[in-house]
Length: 328
Image: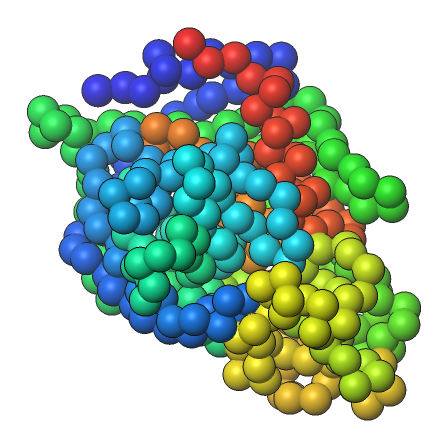
């Protein structure tokens, strides 16, 4: 069976076969942990799914596709929303699923309060390592549809440059036969971070698991307040204001690396000298995975260059790609 007929190439995007078949997990993966923003405990179960179904969340039998159509702009994380139900902080999990090639998956979410209509993915150590290890432990298999047929995996190739920008931040994609990612960040007020650039070799599962997955969320701490300046480009907010808005209630030195403008890193050592920049690549992969559909690859085959990006800008880029493709 081929999914090529489900996609129509445009001037900007060409959908091509990857030469591989769609995959899913071989069995259920279950993980429970604390969440970053709500501070609550949640449980995630990853279930095998049929070919062509793609990845989607299941929260109390409410299904939310992992699509930019359901992404809402929220500070410091990526949130999916449908029919009054929200799934928050999905980026690390989706990043691991995209990189590992888990093309089809039902993501069941559970929280402790049945009255609350939103749930958050656990933060663990602030990286994607827990998910990568879990996927490696259970393994992958070729996904089949209801008739037992396998499906080829498609990928979006960028034919000409495309970009999205906000103020002095941008994400751009240039034609390339392999996926490359170049990312830059700049924190002139925090010497220990400063200006960093990271550029990947051709991105594959091995490179991701060895060089990207273990990079942790980072924050800037200054003047006795917790400043989260890094997950998107926003003004510094005092911790009480953020927590009153339901943010970083579960933040700690165990799930983020924290840097002070005057004292440097408060919980060293770093896993990489440029760990903050690598974590931005991790986030970008998770956010761009929202371009996936019908079990296809979401990450565009292109040289992707980003500077001072954040979740909102990453989603803008996906919308740029979506608005310039034709689907039948």
